[in-house]
Length: 268
Ligand code: ADP
Image 1 (cartoon, helix red, strand yellow):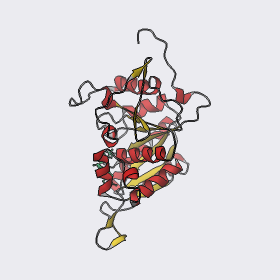
Image 2: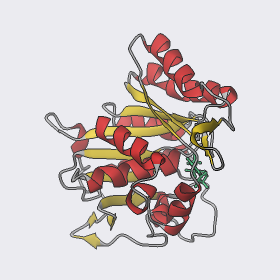
Image 3: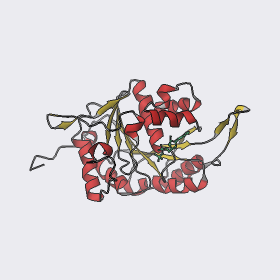
Image 4: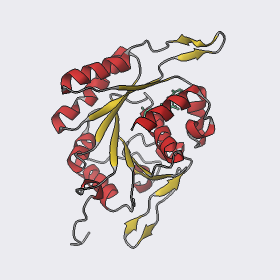
């Protein structure tokens, strides 16, 4: 920036009241982005001022889930204005790619700078909550984020499958190295309410127990209670809402998955 003074990260200033949650998973496809999008939308619908950074650089899906894929932020007085969608202020790595169709091949230092810029050069205003959708696994972004936002708490998303739980626990345990707190575990795709016999019959397509196992494992490793915050059922409407740019919690507020997501959002 040609010698311009470094801007401070507003969320790490003493007295900042913004709660920060970095949403992590062990692997892709467990619904991390869907859960993050719905938590953000549920918070905004409750009047919470919420910002969302889509830092899932290779799998950025947040803009589509909010119906603003391809949107570009405007710049006002050298500050980047986040894109508003369903009451949430959004910034995504997608918005800074020269060409949407070319895969991003950013290396560590570039990623770090991009994240830093999202935190310092974006006009967030006063936020109650800042959510960050991390890439899956324990990569450069998680480490950069811990350096830039040591006060961010980690939320771990997993499926009930034990193999998924193992890698999710590894992703969550990065908090030990970075001295961050783990706010809790969210189990997604927990069960399919049986379409024939009724919702009390749960089809456990991916097994059961993964979320609790991650919560217990992280509690042990960190020596602090890590709660299992919710078990979100499978629901085709959740995927459809994501594809259509209308988060489930807004479009289908009565769906059981919506109720669980709203409860989790209230606890954060
Ligand atoms: P990740 O961010 O972990 O890679 P996504 O949020 O992109 O995962 O979800 C992967 C796919 O699974 C998407 O097509 C999404 O719509 C779908 N999905 C996620 N959670 C659920 C759910 N509870 N019920 C049905 N489909 C889901």
